[in-house]
Length: 151
Image (tube, rainbow, N blue to C red; front, side, top):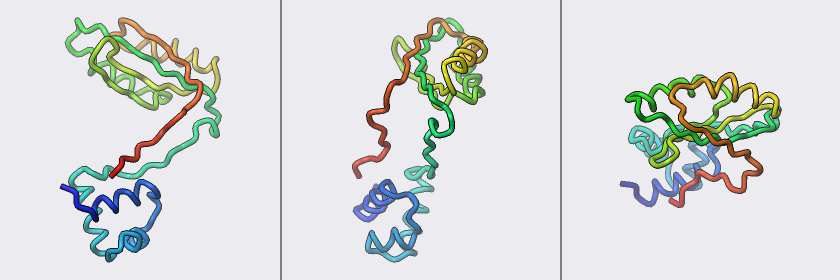
């Protein structure tokens, strides 16, 4: 269970993950040693799973983002596992989500332009196993992206 100090650490880390342990400790009004031990404990318990760089794909020349909603042929016992294993191998697939319901999987695909997207779609996506149906949704704008939790 998290206490107020753990929550304070998480709030500051979410707001600025680049803070050093001593800066974080100072903001949380605790010692660096206590702060470090609490972070280590939250990492060991899987609460803090790591830090990552957020990359602006458009700055690297990827102007197209498409969300593909995929329905799998569920008559095949290993359809989910085989599909997701091969989808992970497509470098332009930056996210894979699975669902219960009519849509089984959602893939986020990035491409440099529409021609590049068509090539990825024909050569890499449509060759994935067990696809029964696929629907493409063209990304227009990201209105909100926030993984911070209100702790």
